[in-house]
Length: 145
Image (cartoon, rainbow, N blue to C red; front, side, top):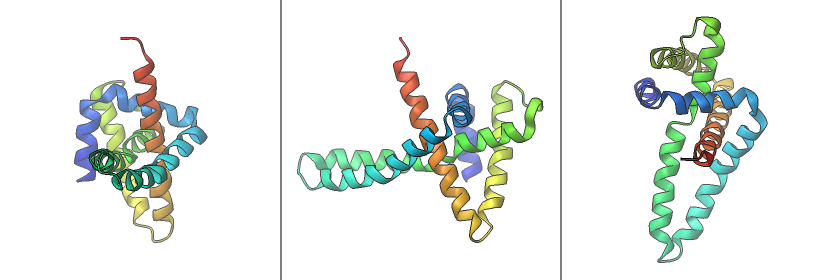
């Protein structure tokens, strides 16, 4: 399921996901901090917002976006990892991005099966990927229309 959802996401938004993957080696610390901060703070803020009658719909919307974002958080990391493994053999096309993602995602899935190390690798990939997605979103929004 993860491979299919990720491949469809990369095929639908190849430039956006490639931009998020490109941010990871350029700004790894910022990506990790933004991803970790967002992963921790959004549920806390949503709980506080849900206490009020007016904030409840916003809290539900925030949690829905949060769940979707966590679901696709590892995609930029897997895409970057696949590009790193394939090197110059990567094609600069939609098909090349999907292949790079699939290679990186398969490696992440294999690493996730290792008992103790797998959990750490998954958390690191999710934090970096989530941060990359958020930073890429900010960069796209800052561009003039």
